[in-house]
Image (tube, rainbow, N blue to C red; front, side, top):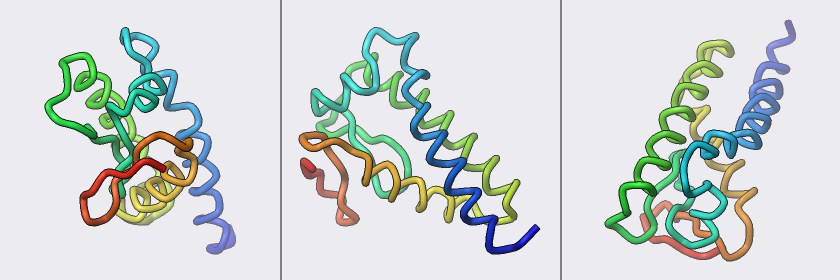
Length: 117
């Protein structure tokens, strides 16, 4: 396999995974999109979700923890499959997730400050 195709393939797989992450929240009373729209959760520069205004309610925490657990597992799988570090996959995932965040939802800046997109 052409070594240049690995990052492209990883990016494509990552985009598909991020697009499908929303199904995880179906079992929760609150969906990921609802939590983001209400300003409860936002995308962090680490590739994971964070609580915008702590403390979060137990359902919001549970939703965040479940999605972050699944993201971490996928990031590790992608990193292993492509012979790269989890950190580089997390960084790529963060860029993709922040880029796809809808206007009015929150993203965390590298400084730690939350800002509406």
